[in-house]
Image (cartoon, rainbow, N blue to C red; front, side, top):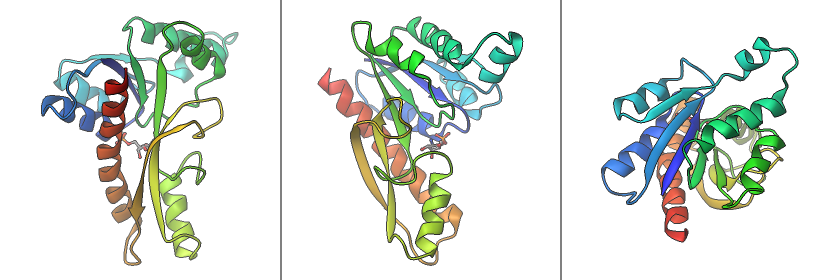
Length: 204
Ligand code: GRF
């Protein structure tokens, strides 16, 4: 059950998948490639350390190189790169580009349909989009929520809105700083993302 992981930054969730494969929590799962839109993403170094193929495909550079190109063209090109690895599952782990419909169609229309899943650090229906942890923290300070959470969901055109595969609550304590909450969130993410991949790999 080979997967391709898309990242844009630190890659601590990618690291959690790598570790779970190494310590046999994720059996029968392999990472065929790690793709980043940022050449400086630290997650690329994490992959290289484990001899996992890495690719950089920058949206900015792609558009700058030819003004006639648009985000849909990027989506189709990105899908082509991913197809080279023939994955069973595509995992967005800290991937910061909204994927155009042209990308999703590539994996929905062709057989076998390949799931694209995303990890979002908020509960279903809450804080869709960027800076979700910070927005939850502020909402807690205003007394609007008493906890937050995260979800692993199928990627559809609407942002952070597809069918939920796994979700988990994350406590917020009144003495928490934002980084306390971020740290707690990331540790729950690592476990939940691995469990979601495990679930999907056993369903196939
Ligand atoms: C995670 O909080 C993830 O949910 C969000 O971006 C962060 C990525 O963290 N999409 P990392 O790059 O996996 O450390």
